[in-house]
Length: 249
Image (tube, rainbow, N blue to C red):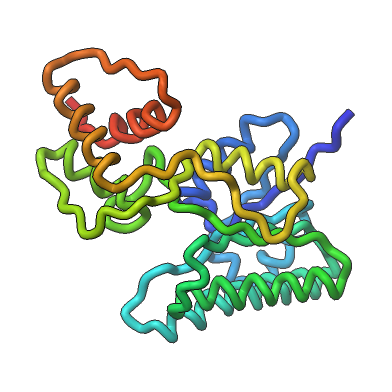
């Protein structure tokens, strides 16, 4: 019989955190350890949290702020607090750290991801714990925040509300659907994937204009009350995402 793994997710209530929590909760191999952002300001609560976890997926971070140094320092402080709690409680859960495929861009957000990842890697080496740094591709899916998380969510929101999005750069973008990302993370937790660092395979790599045209086609079909049929997996994922943004009737 497989051991039930106790998993905590910092950033549990964000876009990825919410989907991951629900995904793991539906799997009988995991027991979720609830996390609230206030734990980072409550040493006792954070200590109790890490002590209960076999694995911690560290998603919590701020990605935008007018003060770049504040952003960097805040994200590093979250990592430092997490390490301090694990050292105080003498616990060594498997830590999975969310970075991004854009980490090499080197702005203060991406540097906080780079430096935080290396700090946790050093901690894990020092106490012989398991650590995995993940480079997330551009992630999309239902509930993704428009004008914030992904251009896909922004396009979906605009088209669903009768607006025509503008393409700033018609680049090819590696996209991963949220359910695919959750599956990858679950396999990292169970040990089916052991690479560190690790970049999950993207779901598709379309051009921005191709995504826009598909979404416009969906909107045309919805307005005409036509059933949308597609056998293409990426198109199915994109359709599921788009329908989530349609105003309630």
